[in-house]
Length: 69
Image 1: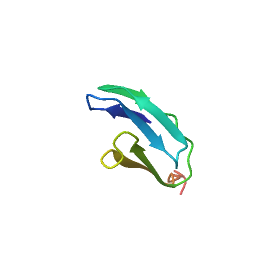
Image 2 (image 1 turned 90 degrees about the vertical axis):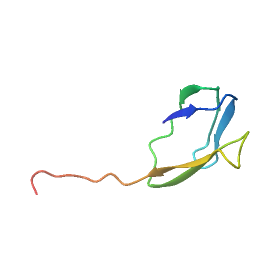
Image 3 (image 1 turned 180 degrees about the horizontal axis):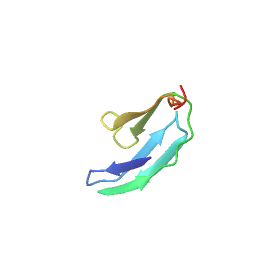
Image 4 (image 1 turned 45 degrees about the horizontal axis):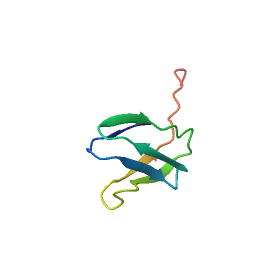
């Protein structure tokens, strides 16, 4: 997963659902490895700004395609 800190201050990505945490430097992008995951909703937040820096990763079931049907 690619995540970007668009603020001018550091933030710490934190997710109990994903069992991940990572410091994100100001105005920088970072990669956080999170998979494979089963379908569901995985919440995350910014530890330094937990009321405003919030989001979720939504994992859906991959649709299988069969060209012979």
